[in-house]
Amino acid sequence: MTPFDTRRLIGDLVVTLDADVLGGAYPDRDLPQEPAPHILARHDITAGAVASLRAALFDMASGNDETLASATGGTALPAAGGAAVVPVGALDLRDPLGAVREMERLAALGVRAVRLFPDEQGVEAGFPSVRHVAVRAAALGLTVLTGGDVRRFWQPFTGLGLRVVFLDTHFYHLGDFLVAAAGEPGFHTSTRLLNSPDALETVAGEIGADRLLFGSRTPYYEPLVPLLRLATGDLKPDEVALVAGGNARRLLLGEPS
Figure 1 (cartoon, rainbow, N blue to C red):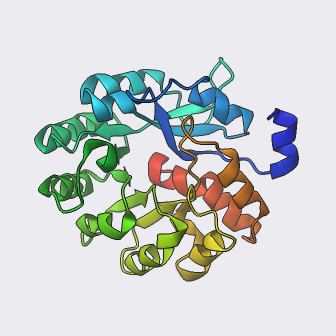
Figure 2 (cartoon, one colour):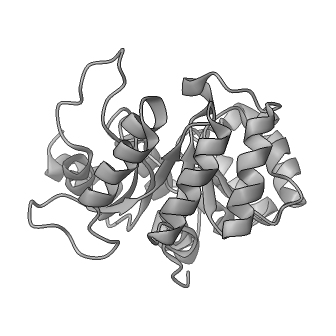
């Protein structure tokens, strides 16, 4: 799809920070045909919060160092013409002691968020590693982005005052997220799988649009689907602005929303 077609479909919507972007490759999938920052820029997404698959699946430190080296901040576009890269530290829950050391190293370098990959790592919500990492992330003041079924993965993050973004909340499971989030003001969700006719509006009406972050999982998923849902929904303009980057910039960059 050409940039003209994209703009015609989504109107004036500009996303200022996509909270769900991956760098690198899965070992069992083909490499993406285009770098994630270029895909984002073609869809008028000006910045992406990028986490390393290498760090998640092979080696935390070297993978995260690659992401840090590619970081461009959250405002200006790099010279290559792609979206800006905001680094997110990827952790390996199979090594909880090493994951905590890596969190501490990243926090000292100014990283404000870490990402968990429980499905890819074969880690379940009840494993002690998840709660161990959550407790230390809360102590360090980090935001946690996590995959996994929200119906199970909400529990290890409760009672910590932790900021958590659930990246895999499916609209079939939205009621469970809303019940959990009602008692946890730090619980947020990505919009990626909230593609039913009223999912975004339901979240905004029940707990507020400040709990929604635009996410696409570029380059392994198509960003146009969540863009269309946000652009054609019934959220108010100020709510759209929050979802399209205001909330992510608050949580991941420390900016006022």
